[in-house]
Amino acid sequence: MYLLLLIIAIIVCVCLSFIVLIQNPKGGGLSSNFSSSSQLMGVQKTGDFLEKGTWVLAIGLMVLSLAINVAVKGGATKADVNKENWEKTKKASQPVNTGAAAPFAAPTAQPQQQAPATTPAPAK
Picture 1: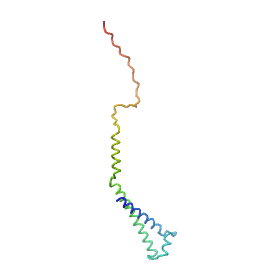
Picture 2: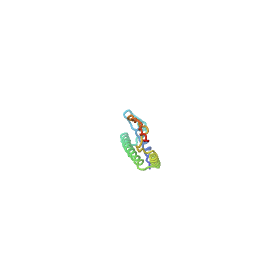
Picture 3: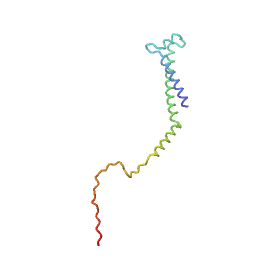
Picture 4: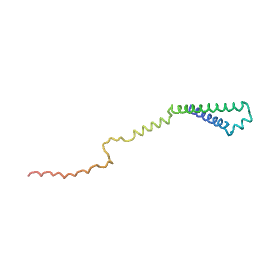
């Protein structure tokens, strides 16, 4: 479905480009070459047709863009599932910090040294 919508969107983009290039701007454009050779619909009718075609293709391109976005986000691919499994495995294989010991923690205070305890000598 995604591939079909993408191909249609590319075709719409190409058609939209041609229609925009054919339109007659104020300074004259590519449409001046085409209008002199065939006067089937007249000058004013050709402009209306090209303007309506531009609007239809532009709106169609927006709708296709939204449809492609929905098609891509709608289903999970096999690669997405594999990525999720890999992240779960990676998280499970990491060591758990129990907070029992901090091997690299710097001591905050100097430990006090105690004098060695003397035991009384046994009585004779």
